[in-house]
Image 1 (tube, helix red, strand yellow):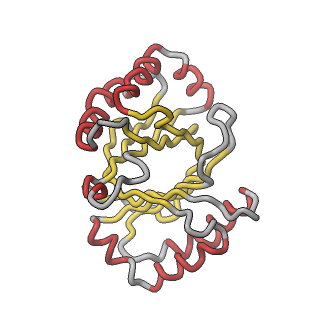
Image 2 (cartoon, one colour; image 1 turned 90 degrees about the vertical axis):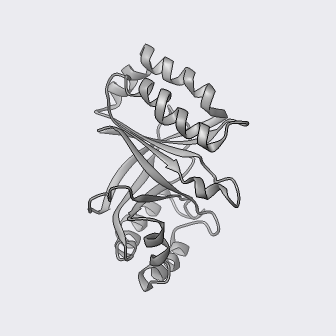
Length: 221
């Protein structure tokens, strides 16, 4: 499987509501026509996340192809060209960054219907190679985080080098599913949550974690 994540920033002058309506409507119709696309998920940042400040991203897209060859063929298609042309209506200049990722399932529970997803953006500690970062994140940190109460599903997306997309913007993107924002907040006083945060110093740059809370729109599966 060839999987990519795209992190998105809307263009100036476009409200979050208008961005989400266009993205899940016209843009999704165009994207779902891309040949070889096997799975397409839109993650829309909660509108409540805009109350205090602008979130780091307005959305995160998940796209899967069978292999790199299918992705290359899709990239040369007229359907991909149409979807990319439509991005100008949605996104700021340089408002999309793409990462090739390798998914690892840590908590293999069902995604709750109408749940929320905590999507975080990780930068490894400057003295660690990506291999050491990935090893610690998967083998040591993953089992600690898996104990957080209320977390229904948890995947780690490990960034992989790919010349088509340039240097990875992040070293990893974890996605955790909760029933709702109340369940997410209720997990924070737990011992497992405290242990998870304490372990971050072993492999992450301090004060570099960013996140959005989002709802999922499954367009193609």
